[in-house]
Picture 1 (tube, helix red, strand yellow):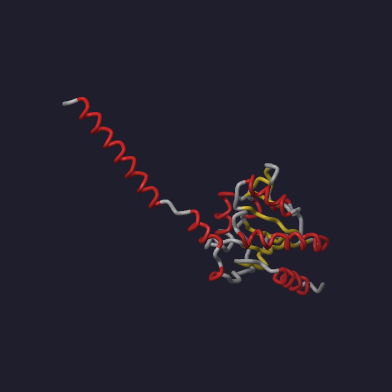
Picture 2: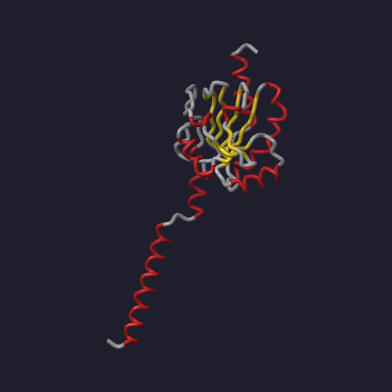
Length: 198
């Protein structure tokens, strides 16, 4: 066999295989935009989800990094009521509601109320966003574990933002899939305090 013919033939096979593999992976891989739509476009999915149940134990006991890279868990936050907000830096509605959450945390923390953010994100972008917005409430990095935590606690769609109000024992008092409003949170707290006769 002619050596030049062999080299040319091998080159065609190599580049043909390379092109085929790349074209297949581009077709199979979801685009960043389509993933963002799945997680962020929740207008048609907004709903109050079932409440009154204990969340999956992993929510309170999950060992997650805080923004300083230290392992901790929500169970160490000793508040009568805890608002758990799942968010991500690339989720516009999530970022837009964070200043309101910060203001409520500042105003209502004396009522044994805490807000905790669980970032479905890597630590570096989350830390930059928190610093940019001046957020002081605790933020944990849920990253790849976040969708599983959401699914096991009422948000099987995996959409963001997702907010839960739980009590000291971890009982789910209220949930909101989609942008949470200040009046939602105040209404939840007023209802709970009224039930206690406060």
